[in-house]
Structure formats: structure tokens, C-alpha cells
Image (cartoon, rainbow, N blue to C red; front, top):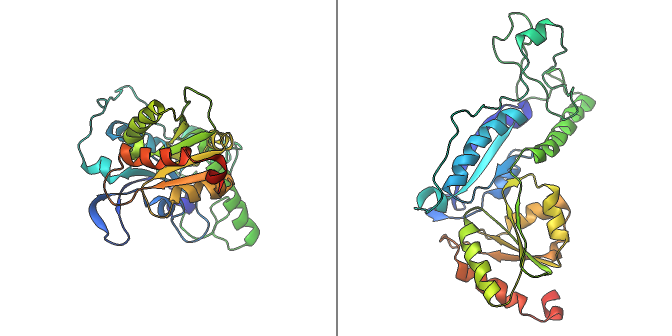
Length: 304
């Protein structure tokens, strides 16, 4: 309902082992598809992937700005490893002068001046409509919203054309979100390489250690740390610039791989999944063993 009625909302998902009650005190990254497409019907949600408690602190604050700017639910995908274990990280910092981003809120003065208001009307071309806050004006700017289908003026309708217009705008708004969410972090190897690696969340420390060890063995690969969904163009460009991309994730079904294939139109053959999902934090040794073995294969065997 929050997605379709465009209500700002923040949800923090501390991902643990599942399905069902699963492993209550064990970590995974297995709620990705659940959160990305949560709902019946066509739905796409924004997700953030912090790497440690400090970034989680920053992303949690940013999530509230994003929720109001984009008028949509924001999922902060925290791994249980971050949520329950002790970490060494940079101290939290906060700027007391920080100004909250309430997004596109129409004022009483704008309403009084005769500015056109339609709750789901795209007037700026970014697919984000203007909204009003309760009590802004005594007679103008009120609207009724609910989870049922509606037109751009917030009027209930089951007319197919009006419904499709709203649904297409929501899809365009998801594209707009790419400019607001945290950008991926790309790190280039010291030597030119056809191999890349993608990772996210609490995998970061183990990945840093693994990369240093692989480099000592003469094995070089570029890396990209995902920090958000929807994926920016930089993600597709990174993948397409490499012959093979290792995708490290902590779940059984390679859920991030599914998202990348589905959303970016990537050939699945480009990916080599590195999956760890026994509930314990992923280790550098696990990553090193999985990647080194594959990188040392002859080119023909690797392709097979």
C-alpha cells in the first residue's frame, strides 16, 4: 500500500537465516528478492546495503530523506552479522546542522496562488508528484488516498488507461531513484584484468582481506561494492567490461545474481556465483579459495 499510495516509509531488515523461523542468531543475505519485489502485483522497492555499523548509521538517516524525497518505502538491508556482532569501524558522526529533505511538499502559499495540485500528477518530469501535509491550507490541497487503483488526481478508478498511467509513472520514479541512492564503490586492480568481483553488505571486510591475499598470489581483479538498488548504469558498465564477474553473496539461491540479470539484462554466463550461507560470517579464506581456484583454470575450462 505504501508503494502504490506513495507514502514515505523506512523498514530496516536485519537479515537472518531462513526460511520460516530459520536460524534466529545466524546471518545471511537472503531477503533480497523478498524486499525488492515485496507485494502482489508489479512492485519495485529501493534497497540500501550498508557494509558496517558506521555506514548503517549513515544509511539509516539517509533512508528517511530518500523515503520523503521519493515518496516510497525504503528498505535498509542490514545483515545480522552487523546487527548482532561487535565490529571495529570508524566512529559515528553527525552534523547538527543537517537539514532534513522532506521532498516535494506544496506550501499554503503555493496552493493559495493557484498552483495546480494533483496528488499523483507528474508536473516536473521526474515522476515524483507533489504532496501536501495535513492542515497546510483550510480549503485546498486535501486529497484522499488508499491502496486501491486511482488516477493522477487521486480519484478512485478501475479504468485501465488511468491505472496504467500511474503504474508507468511509478516505474519512471524508480529510474529517478538511481540519481539519489548511494553510488557503488569501484576499485581497480593494480594490473589490467578480465576478472571482476561484486559484493555487498557485511562481506566487505572479508573481501578486502581476500583481495590483498589474491594480489600476493598474482591474481588481480577489479571490484564493485553494491550499496543500493535500483542499480546505476555504473553497475552494468562494470559487468560488461569484464569477461567473468565473481558475485559473492550470503544466500543459497544467488538472489543478487537474479536481481542483476533481471534488472540489467546481463548474460547470466558472465557471473560466477560465490555462495556462503551456513549462517556464519563469510571469511576471507572462503572467498580466496573460491576465486583463486577458478582464476587458475585454463581459459577453455573456465568458460565451460
